[in-house]
Length: 314
Image (tube, rainbow, N blue to C red; front, side):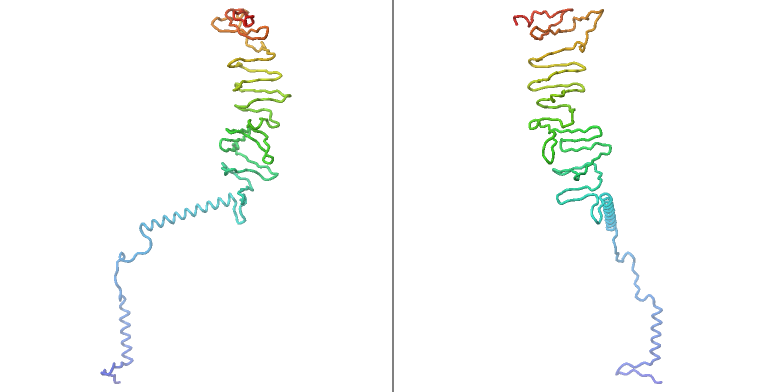
């Protein structure tokens, strides 16, 4: 079989056998050369991806902060859901109205409540408003005015005065404003316990007695004098009674002094004990009812004195 020779006119055609041998040689060379195109490179020279160093630390802090915020938000959501009972249908424990009214539909446990300016606390019609303190008094306070409700007593303290008014009729039941209202105790109240009271006069009804008592002492003082009038005026005290006046003390009417209630002088051998070091006075009275005193200088001394107001010279 003759093979084709190269010529100047073009490439020489090869036979099928020559082409097969050439392909087998190329495949053998390719299978044996596994490092073709391999270039050795160090790890430090490669391009690094991701957050490393300070950026990585900052990213971790941001993630932790977001986790804490999500946890706090979850706790607040649980509190709102359990305490306020807010659900898909609304709030089960309270209602908010367009007029600004906040209505509690269930029992509410609160410590200190600060209402807004001119706020009103009230209950439903024909239903009681119950406010209970857990082993503590219930206190309503506005500025210097304070109302405290305890188990044993109810106290009201105010520097401006106290007034009880019907909100519907605007009629005043009880007020300490003496200039515009007369001080009357409410119906059913018979005892008024105060430490200090300032008023023009104190009176009682014609069919009842007026009793003024003091735990330690009772002081009655008037800027323009003190006038005590009554069918019978009686003073009872465990200690001393003291009447003070700049000019004079006038006792008009029947004045009686019970000797049984006066302290007795100590007696020695049946006679009155006399001590010259003590300054004593004897109360004397003229025929016209004028009272005067005489200093006792010796035992069994009478009312004779050189300055006798009962004499004709006076």
